[in-house]
Figure 1 (spheres, rainbow, N blue to C red):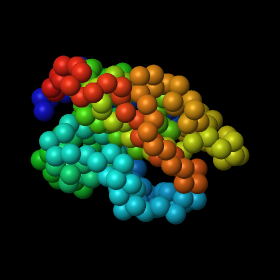
Figure 2: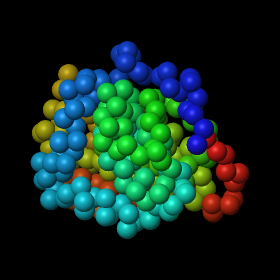
Figure 3: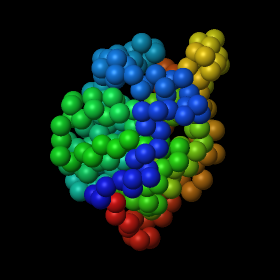
Length: 233
């Protein structure tokens, strides 16, 4: 896997632009990175979904079936949960995040040579089109300032037949979601699954599971894996 283009690496690094949401900016703090894995392990239960990380990983493996030698992109990797799951399936992984402290924490927790770590903003990446067999997005869709742009980039970098795996909090209309949508309280967004599907033209949703307010979805890019040229990173 070749290095990420320098122009992509330089985007949204330690000097965040004003366009970042408050939730995105909070991830730039080393203290947030240090405690993220602890929170991630407990987050779904705290959100009303009796779902452990082990069950989440098992669901992902059962539906996506990552294969040895495949190239995967882990978007908003944070402490590297999905990157680690993929590496243990013998996939090559590019794990990206806005936050340098998160990347350092991920590399510390998942010291695997099959994982490359890169700092970039997937709302506007310079990654080559049709470069990956699969993309994972674990909760980053809720925190990003531009969810439509992030989905478009994830779709753009998928090869024909490639998979997109999403985990996010869907819209419930509850008062807490209304609070956290306010810019000062995090600027989070809570998409509806129908909205997500409309912003992924050319991809077909094959699986969807709601656990409490948590949504898991698998999409596949139209076309067979050999329909287009496979660019390499």
